[in-house]
Amino acid sequence: MSQWLARQKAQFILCFIDDNRWKYLWNGLGATLKITVFAVFLGIAIGVVAACIRFTYDKTFQTMRPGPGKVLFWLANAVCKVYITVIRGTPVVVQLMISYFIIFASSNNGILIATLSFGINSGAYVAEVIRSGISSIDPGQTEAGRSLGLNYVQTMWYIVIPQALKNVLPALANEFIALLKETSVAGYVAIMDLTKAGDIIRGRTFSAFMPLIAVALIYLILVMFFSRLVSLLERRLRSSER
Figure 1 (spheres, rainbow, N blue to C red):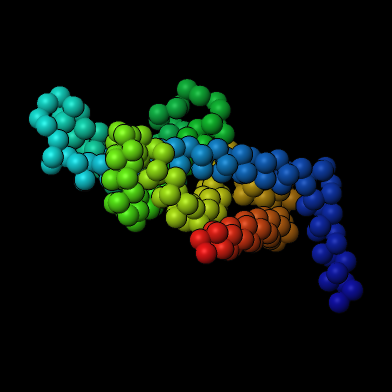
Figure 2 (figure 1 turned 180 degrees about the vertical axis):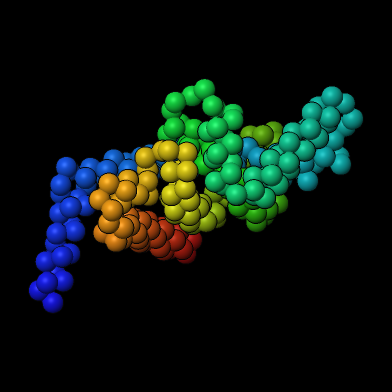
């Protein structure tokens, strides 16, 4: 037992203490959180716009008067449908590689490219979540807004969307957790995220156990922490509805 502990201590020192290799994990963690946070905000922004277009199209397109506005609205809805279908139907790692090696091949800012890629990917899923949230709002809320003199856009912005976001907030929080884990594929395009940091340590020490277990534990701690926050948020929302 003592020999096993001595070997593990030596492996720990080799992987994390020598040459300050723990800094790889620290810097990788920072990159992972940075990509995740900004990608979530981008995804929510894209998702809200796409959800509003899709929902409004389904509710009002048949009653709209013919004209250029109706044609543009049809095109916007078609773009949103294609976007959601393509993004949800292809792996995120493939989308990331297309962005890095084709679309933004001339850029050296890997963090920005990853943020855009994951944000665009998240937006497709967020759009469907928010659209379901908007659909769950009583139509009387829209009628009430129109009776107060608000136009359709104002009614959606000030009355419907805030209520929909409250209903789907736990789902959006879970999307944040899922996105946090999905960013682990960023290393495919040489971005030094948390997973890539562990792999760099493995490659330099020829020891796989310590760095990869450390990466797994860090992800687990992060997911448990944010899952706890989601549980508290759901409890707070339930208590506010009473």
